[in-house]
Structure formats: structure tokens, C-alpha cells
Length: 274
Image 1 (cartoon, one colour):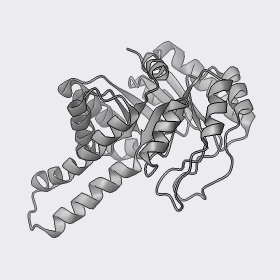
Image 2 (image 1 turned 120 degrees about the vertical axis):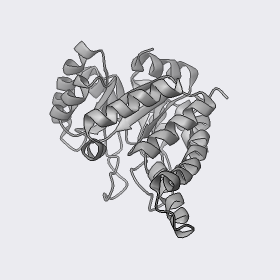
Image 3 (image 1 turned 45 degrees about the horizontal axis):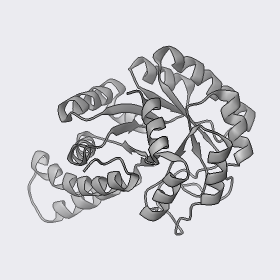
Image 4 (image 1 turned 180 degrees about the vertical axis):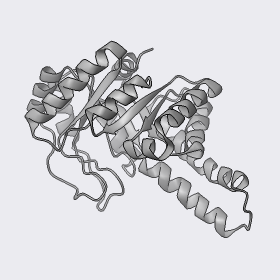
């Protein structure tokens, strides 16, 4: 099943793919253990910073081997690709899905850049995601710049993009104020275009809001911050309780809480089989 077929299946069933970032062997292991436990498909996401940290070939080979070893349906996705050049590198490494993020550029420049990536991806049969509107990144002020149904319809028509991340009140990183998704706006965007819609910044959003978003058109839910936070909190606790220096004994103890978190999230989006 291709990424686009999976997203369309979720669209028809009013479920969503949980797209999870990983940062090292342990966080990758946590994702795979959770997905295997609940029998959910995985979309393993890599950002530029994670690629710089692990190395593109190493990260991809780790992910491919993990998908094979755990026997789950899975794919690799470039999250927030900042340049056409990085997108090309990822396509050459076999990514089934790529995101080009030109959302901070003017509308026409976003369209132009996204069109380039859509054409680049065609020979690879890879899915392309873009972003429209203002979804605050780490360190940026939250609020404002929401996606409009009219702009979404124009953007999709102009680019032919497969998936669109929309700004409806979510943000990357930790929330300074309780998040509140604009569900009526999302419903209007969904009515204006048949494209697969994506929710970025799901960490910290109450499950009922995420489920309501899925019921109104979201088919891909990104999760990153809570994975890092849960792992690091658990690791810090373990380190205060032991003098063990063998990281092969210490790190695995921080994996289990992430597995528990992810099992809940897979059930939240509706793709967990058990």
C-alpha cells in the first residue's frame, strides 16, 4: 500500500496515521515496539536536524531494518524539509513521502517551490506534503496566520500536492496556553478540497480535540515533542537512581514509558488494530 493509498484509506474510515519522529536507536525502538504491540502502521519521520545528527544513510537503514524486524507496515517521511536539495537527497534514499515546508514564504513562492517538489517526486512515486498558514515552530509566538478554505483550495489546485498541513490552532513544541483547535475552520477546509489534511504539533493537545479533528478531515497526525520529553524525563529519573555506566542497561529503561505513550496515541488516532 502506498502512502497516498494509506492516507485515502484513513480519510474514508475517519482515522489517521500517527507520524512519529525518531532521534536515535532508542526512540526508534519505542515507536516500533508500540506499533507492533497494537498492530498499527508506522510513518517514521526524520527532520533535517535528525538527519544531520544520525546521518541520512544510517538513519534510513536503521528505519528500514526496524520495519522489517518488527513486521509492521511502514514508510519513511521527511518532516519539514527546508530545501529542494534535501528533498532530492531523501527521494534518492527511497523516502516514500517528503514534506517541503515553504510556509513562511509568500503564497506564490510557496506554490512555486511546492510545484517543483511535486514534479521531482513523480518518478519516485513518492507522496508530497506541504504546509499552508502559520503553525508556530519552536521559539516562535503562537497564534495567528490560520489557513483559510479559499487559500487551501487554491494552493492544492495550483500544486497538485498530496497532503496539506493546515494551521488551525496547533503549534510545534510545548504550549504556553491550553491549545484549542478551530474545528469549524478545519471542516470548511475539508469541504473546500479533497486533499489529505495533516495536523502538526499534536503534542499536548487533548485526545478529544485530536479525535474531533480526525472526524473533520485530518488523516495524518504528527507527534514529536512528547516522544523526546517522555524519553528524557524517564532517562533523568533512571540516572538519579543508579550508578550504572553501561548505557546499554540504562537507556532501555527510558524506552518503556515512550512505548506506553505511543500505544495511547495509536489508539487515539484509530489505527491500532488491538
